[in-house]
Length: 161
Image 1 (spheres, one colour):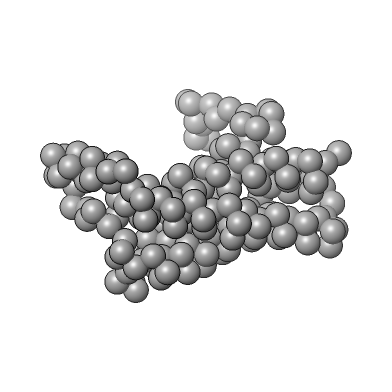
Image 2 (cartoon, rainbow, N blue to C red; image 1 turned 90 degrees about the horizontal axis):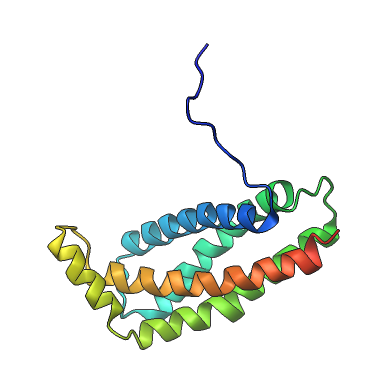
């Protein structure tokens, strides 16, 4: 019998579980977004195309997120159409009304953080373009905004006890 010498501790509170799931969702979202961005040869100056790719990737992850939030974060054993409709409405509002404006704003008015990250990447020998840094920085900041929105409304509206 093989045993794991490092025990995995599962967080007990909703907020740590939400943050853990948020990290997984965000990683999946970033991977899908970058695969779409590279496959479509989209650069950071093509804001409309990037917004469409971001909507596609975030929307795909929303389905996974519903199942995992219901079961893992908020530990609801039942699911109704009401839960699904509210979750979708809140998630889509977060994607369209919170995440996209932040994403577009950061892409248009990047204060030089992407250039700074790019220069660090060059020193470290990372083969990443400035477009990678600028689009992913904008996506990270926008994701934090929509994650905050999502948690507050999932907790108070969708999965309330």
